Length: 122
Image (cartoon, rainbow, N blue to C red):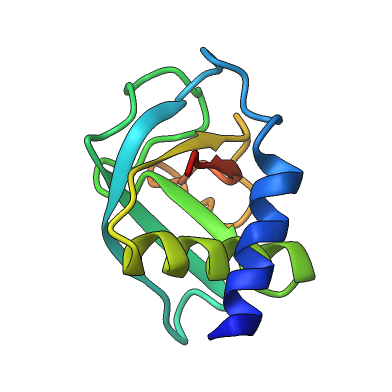
């Protein structure tokens, strides 16, 4: 548990300042509504937040259910996932922002925006 808290703290320090106040698809005060990953989509986490971010602001994003994807095959992806789990465990709202790109899940007519960053205040 201590290791995850350290990772979460590190991510907060690194990403706390990277979320501009009004970037596209930013959701400033959300909680996780649902997350999923599985063998059919590879090493990618799908994220649904509540409340939903503004729609139709990222041209590539077409999926009507999932809001963001997060690749878990990098250290950054793993650290962001640990931060998400910590925020869920603390029942803490946070800010989340998309990258404006759809890199991990891009089937025609169903693409999902890639996650850019997470920010929280304690």
